[in-house]
Image (cartoon, rainbow, N blue to C red):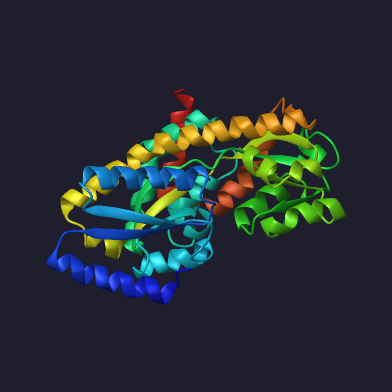
Length: 327
């Protein structure tokens, strides 16, 4: 186990070593397990960097939350004691308001729309918004499309959610979204969801296919309704302090390797989604398409007004929606 003190000491040592030679080893953190697509995506990036630098640059990945929660590791990254970090957007929302935009409910109309937007100018603008706050945004990784699942029955229209206790992450956006649909939002630790479903503390939750399957939530909540209400990505960021210790050529190398790791991660993610979906369908869960997603999205006006408050955010929303219309 490596801790904050070891990271700070190693960072200082590497900085000194960098003055005498050009070899550098960098540390990266991820809360997901080592076989998760984001970890494998960063590992692909690490392999590219080692190969393209002739072994002069290397990365060590601490997966499975070895260095603490994402909020803890983000603090280390801003401070410069940790070089790279794969994080969910939620802890970035308080750092840069632009990161709220991709988490808006019903913003993206498809996975393809989400990927085009984040690979394009809107995504780059969101990544760039982090730099004044001590972070360099390198790329976005997929986190899937989140949908509702529950113990009661299929959700076909908003009225089917009325009165249900739906677990949400500890996020104001999610609480507002579920409330706007008529359900009772119940913030709860992810690890408590299965027991909450079994004991009736909650009636349902929302997440992507791999999370629904891997946690075995499908055993307790057998109705999965494809609302695809949020497609928020995850981000790979680098400490600005670590970034500034790289030469311009090495900065270019890191940016390109990060971009090149994205299709690797997405291929792994898509395969995992397909496998998870098939496993739970084979287990007999009931999955249903929602005939009129517009009946859900049209209730989000007040939610968007509450969280889209700056001109920059409004421009990003407009640019992203235009990219969806072009498809």
